[in-house]
Length: 549
Image (cartoon, rainbow, N blue to C red; front, side, top):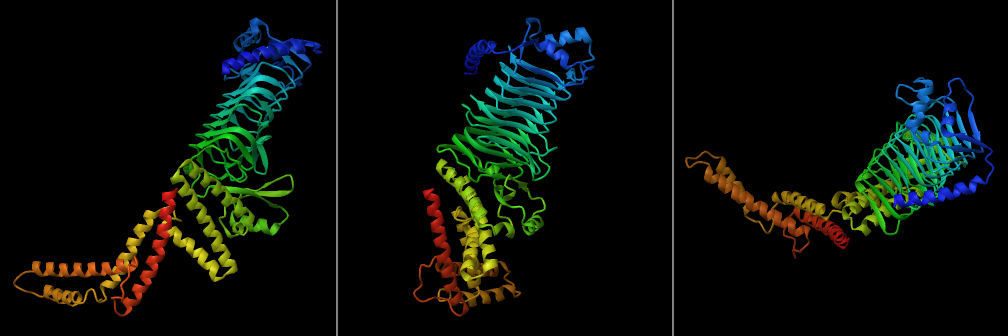
């Protein structure tokens, strides 16, 4: 498919050349001559090329041939210790026509590389660069391979078949804004260093990277691509919680696999039409799903990636509220705060403390994010992930109910809060019926131990006989201790079985007619019967929920 596209693009490029030949390109220059001027160490002013047709002679149509030509003329003084050709001048190319592919392979640009409003077959960058601006160009493909970029890189408003970033390292701003991409965008095996911090954002119009209060990586494309947007095996480093990866806008497919995120992944406002894969990634920070529109049919999201209260939402608040910011920083000194264009602050919300829990709007967004994931897992039949997601969501609701009770009081608020506490302990919020069975057995045993010390109509003689047998056992006699010990053990076991039977009967509320216990034990039986009825009702609901799921 890629070969066919390359062939068709070559034909289109040929006809495009014929069309643009009629345009006014008053200047012509050979590519190797252009490079020779750019690397001249005796010139420091920027090299600016406008309205020029750039030609490629057969004898200089590859990197090795150009390098051989320069070495034959200047020796090795134009190359550094890494055998890279050192470009000492700013290079600005505007409204030019390249008659072939533009490859800057094994180059070191000391200053900047700028190409605007130009036409070329393909553009390849492989080397070490500082400032790079590639804007409003037409090219079959744009590839950044095995490179280091120390300062801002802009790939904006271009029309291309595909964009590929592979095994490259970014320290400054990377932006891909409003490109028209016919096939796919693939970013793989890249490292984004925290030197400037970053945040990454794909809008239908942008993928943005932010440093502290500013974006330093923008991947902002229109969503007019015919293929997927792919992130594979990338490492997004961060040294504080200000840094985030933000994807937003409209795209057909999004595939993110085997990436390491030490920055927050923000999918706020993202809309995916066909397929969404988020699998085998490592998140050491948080992830935001609010206002994300998932595909209707294909969603593959592994819950284990973001379990542990890593889901967040981003909320805008007015920055002029100094009391709020003081309280916010006091609750969370490392909080991520970013200003937006409306002079508001964008803060992450996780429902972790009282200051956050008072924000009902953000709380509802957070719960909706969990609910969306829960629905996806249920639809896919992934019951384990659905249960884990639901349990974590209910724990956040428990925090909110606790906050409401502490601030408003009231028996109703208290019981709502404590009911979720009980559900957490007894069934993990209705997701683990087996847990409720284990706890029920513990409850029955505890009450049975209590009943052991009290007589009942079911066990009239065993207590007194057990006491007499124990006295006989501890007395010295010539017949030995084995037989008295076995007698005591048998009596103890019989009393324990009677006590356990009474506890079990009381817990499952099978009914006694007249309560067989006496004294305090009679009232304890009534209490156990109520507890058993209540817990078994919860168990029944949890079991039915899991069976139906």
